Image (cartoon, rainbow, N blue to C red):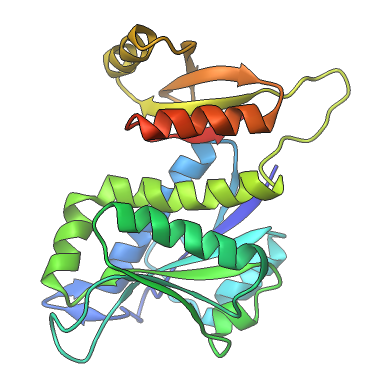
Length: 259
């Protein structure tokens, strides 16, 4: 099972960027907890550098992720510019443009672009401590400009979609390199499933199940940790699950591959 360290940038006495009373540290923490929850629902072991309003240096954040033996580090931030409404868009920063971190950065940016953000791209920032000091592949996501009224509107109105998009970008990367696979336990068969929803309300899960059934998908509901999970298929081969995910996503469903 993959372990992902989720870092809410800034915190405590360090508010990060501030615009009209809005503090970056608060947006970062809210987003980090939402992304982590989705990853946990999909079988990922999540480590949080912080879950409340505390101050940590970037070195402490990287060290905490290292000590947790995380496979990836995802640090969540909001961007800022010298003048209000000067720029818009999302970008993801990496130590260098290579390997799994580049793939994850591009996956996350692509997901957020689908929500309406301008995709600024992936940028190399080898001088950033949280990227330089982490021992695992690390990305720093700038989820829109905090001093852009347009980006703040998107951040607030599409918050759930942003959390899902970042989580999907992470899951796509884990799935592509096999890190999301369950350990091979003797006597235990691993099945890959495509999840299309996680609901606290059973009626909502039933509604989506019935819709999928009417479209001919092999769908079922399982209950886990207080959520009703709507899942399609049970595939021995990850490639078959990936193909099913592509079909479902093409038909407008928000999808994750789980085991």
